[in-house]
Image (cartoon, rainbow, N blue to C red; front, side, top):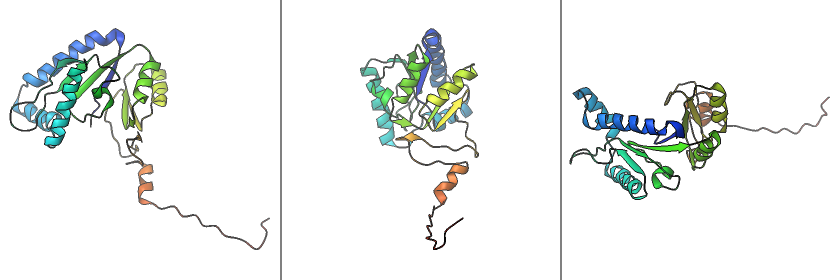
Length: 203
């Protein structure tokens, strides 16, 4: 599981783009040992089948055509297997396919925003709502943004932190019902209503 959309305050954008591009270059071209190479190939860049591989590559190409800036990656790894380089786009606009569609691949899209209202509106404009994350030093902002996001799960200053006690599931097109937690028991239960007519009055 991973998020392919990252919103960054405008004042921090230039520095973040440079750092993420450098990290991606390191991952793509300079892995330090075989164990890391195996982890990256199996966990981050390997695709389940040719159909998914082709879908991701088409979305990457659409990002290039529609004017997003390719910071790094964007190509297949080698001529055998279904491996795709970790890919980062900046300058992504809301109308682009890579902004609107679920990629489910090693692709990160970077957006800029000027206000909390703007970034919440963008996050909620999608037809999906499985999970989101907020990174901030302000507890007030963490609570207000978490409340405003139309997402089944919101992580604060962390990501993909799943626990058996916490229900997990999505809003909108991301599905119905919940896994984990007490709410998951509803999927294994049936509700029955029994109505009885009494001949005597109740006092």
